[in-house]
Every structure is written in C-alpha cells, then in structure tokens.
Amino acid sequence: MKLNEFSKTVNKLCGVPVKITLDAEQKVNGMLGAGQKKSAAAGEEQLVDIRWEGTLDGLLDTVASSLGLSWKYTDGEVNLYYLESRTFNVFAIPSQTDMRSIVQSGIDAGIGGSQEGSTASSESNGKGQSSQTTSVSLQSDMVNDIQKSVETMLTQGVGRLSASPSTGKLTVTDTPEVLARVQRYIDSENSSITKQVLLNVKVLSVTLDDSNQFGIDWNMIYSGSRFGASMLGAMTSSGATAASGSNSVSASILDGNFVNSSSLINALAQQGKVSVVTSPSVTTLNLQPVPVQVATQTSYLARVESSTTANVGTSMTLTPGTVTSGFNMNLLPFVMPDNQMLLQYSINLSELKSLKEVKSSDSDDGNKIQVPEIENRIFSQKVKLRSGQTLVLSGFEQNSSNASRSGFGSVFNWLMGGGVSTSDKRNIIVIMISPAVME
Image (cartoon, rainbow, N blue to C red):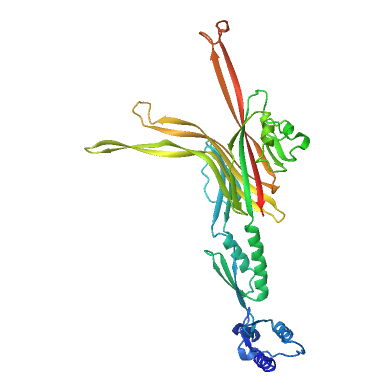
C-alpha cells in the first residue's frame, strides 16, 4: 500500500489519526533531496514486505525507518515527517574581537599592510636605514564561526540555517539525526566558551643596591623546591642557561597561587627592595581577550603653527599631543578540557624619559615644540599552565647611577675633604600572572 493508504489503515484499526507532512511526502516521492527532481507520479513508492504484530509505536518505527522518516505523537495524533526545525542558543555576546601586538624598531618602521597570525618582516635600503617589525594579530567572531561550523553539518540540498547574531540564536531545519548532532556540538561549544577565568596579575619592582649583584638569583629563591617551581627557561643574552640569574630573562611556573601571598615577595626582599607597582585582578571568559592598563597620560606641545592675516597680524596655533606611558597588558586564555590552559599575553612597559624642546631656528624667536622620548619594553608570548599555577616573568631591567660630590674647592682635593661617590642601582621588573578557572 501507499503511505496515504497506510495512514488510513492505522486510523481505522487503532483510532489514531496519522498526518503526513508535505516534506515527508516529497521525500517518499523522490522530490526532496540532493539531485532528486522526480515527478510525484513517477516517483511514488509503496510499503512492501512489512510484517508486524504488536503495539502501534513499533509499527510506526518500522515504517518510518524504511522510508527514512521520523514520527512523533502530539495532541492525540501521529505526525510522520522528514524535516524538523529547532532553535539553538549560542551563549556568546555578539562581538568582533581584534587584538594586535606590534613590536617595531629601526629608523624607518613604515611597513604597510595588514597581517594575521604571527609574522615577521624586515627591510633595508642603500642609505644604511633599516627597520624590523613583528606583528601578532587575532581576529575572531565567535557567533559567526559557530554558524559556519553548523552549516557544514547540514544535509546537502535539504538542510537550512537561519541565524540571528544579535540575539545569539540559530534556527536549523533538517532531519532529527542532524539536529541531534548540531545540539551536541552547540552544547559542547557553550560549555567551553562560558568557562570563566580569573586572572590575578601582580607587577613588582625589585631594586638592587649591591653593585656586585648582577640580577636576581632565582636559583637561591627556588632552592629546596619550596615553591615547587618549574623553570621554563632562564637564558642569558649569549644563549647559555643562566646559573645565577645575572643579566637573564627568565620564565618559571610555580605550583600554587602566589599572587595573593607574601611567600615569593619575602624571598625577593632578601635580595633587594621590593615594591608593588600594580596588582589588578580581571575576569574574562574562555577565548575572550581582556586588557589591563595602569598608565599615565602626559600632555605636551606637539605643533606650533603661525598664520598671517592682512590688517590683523600674525596668529599662533598651538596643538597639544598626548603620550601614554606605564603598564599595558593583553591576556587571552584558552581553557582545555582538563582545566589546563594556553595563555597568550602581550605586555608593554613604557616609561617617559624626557620631553625635549626642539626649536625651528637658533634665534630666540624660533617656534618651540616638545618631543617625547619613551623607553619601551614590549613582548608577546604564549605559555601552557594549569589553573592555580603562577607564571613568573623577570629580566626587564633598568639601570640608574647617582653621584654625590663633597669638599671645599675642587672635589679632587682630598686634603680639603673633597671626594666623589657614586652608587649604581638596578631596577628589575617581576611580573606574576596566576589564572584560575572558576567552576
């Protein structure tokens, strides 16, 4: 019998109406599906070789599976259908993320073009000028990326997708099997992207007064495994492993959250004077970058323009500029299923050294502007660590020298109490980052 005859037979025998949706009729008649363009008369199929004795639900399972259909019982009737629509919620705020970290140096740093991923480029010319630029860029649109993944899961020529990025909803029309796969995928993505991460950051300044002390001796701090430290690397400028921490850039991972404790600070205080520069705590979601900034904005005179108007005279226009210096950081966590984490961090430590005055001419009437001189320490790195561990970065150093003179007359006349004393200080920045996945 044909499918319509089957529905009438079930209604007659069991008293339960059976409705066949239009897409189910098209599927059975071969009019629905990829590459199928048959007519209803030529493509009609009949139910054959079906033997059943038992409850109605077993018969419906057998018939539906033989035709590639599904059925459900609602409001006192059975519906045989092929396609079903379901709306899924994506737990992500619709937004586009664009995070960039650029490190450049040289006389001519004008390298154009947008770059994605991690790239490095350099150029030079015949005049001896050179430049080098390294750019790390991240561009993401989470809702759009999930939508593209769902599109690849749809039945070709049959499945349909309608997206509402502003509300974070995806409406999918496809077979129940495909909808079940889409549901599992979106549930997995929602569970991942809604993991909350607390990032504790502490920036310390360690001042070393001993002229014979080249840097922090991390081997002494970590001796005895009191902190459970795992050294990622402590490399000198020559590439050899630093034994005493002299002139080294080191990265280490400590077991345990030391950002809010005084254990490591007390150990550092045994080698120099420790002061806390900043200690922010920020919260973000998985795969969502978060910026941290503790900086100072300084205004300066950037431009002076003069204009002459007939019968009026000369007028001056002063254009101010702003320079921002201090501590800037971008953090991007990627939480893995076992609560291990890939952490990408970009740090910019800048200090305004001076505002130099530049004159347009040697005469006193020349226009003067100010030119800021900034010392930058910029780097972007990635690290793998577990929730609750602490990443310790050090090796960002700054030297300062102080000289004092005393005596009557020439300072070199030691008989009259003359003398010159100098003291060298070494300022080392230590950065501690401790992420914690909040269940």
